[in-house]
Image (tube, rainbow, N blue to C red; front, side, top):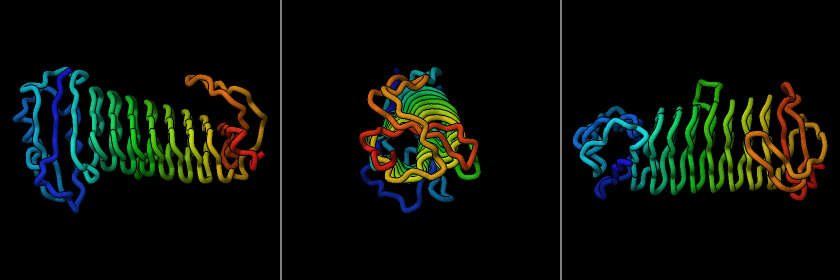
Length: 274
């Protein structure tokens, strides 16, 4: 494994304009020397700057050609840095702290780990790989970018904290696991794939879903009237996921669409919906 560390310079103030930093990925660092990486361009609004302008960069002098062997470590307050890991195909990115919008958008492989929080559109249009967020996530996690109607098609996203609205929007396949809770429209337009959430969800989960599975272990505040109760399931077994112990209420929906999706609610926490 070849490691390179990018540490935000102490003299660098948090920019008022977000910085477009899609160049930061193992794919773009492969076969380059440290000096070449320092001169790579990023954009602050309409101004072109280099990585060296904002980061102190250290690592092996030459990173080699194997993308899978490259590990990028990012340190600093990066909540206004966008598109890091965009379209990455392999390797590892570890963010010590929080990160801005569009993290790992369209990634097809590799792994991104964030110790803090992430902003909106993390893992949007994801095609593979793994995204692990130890803090909270913003809106549209694993969803689709503006102007597209295809969310993540493959891969795995795990969030240890909470997520905001429209998690899994237009999701076509893959897995999203959330240890915390979620706001509105969880799994909206879900076509296929699996969403499992341990915490509570406000309302409108599975709106206009046409396939896939949503499992809510916490409390769903309000269920859509276009979902129909089917039966009670003991020790839920989900294909390509495993067994979730407990008693679950099974609903089919969304009847506003083709009613092919399945919503499971942990019975103990959702007696108000029986």
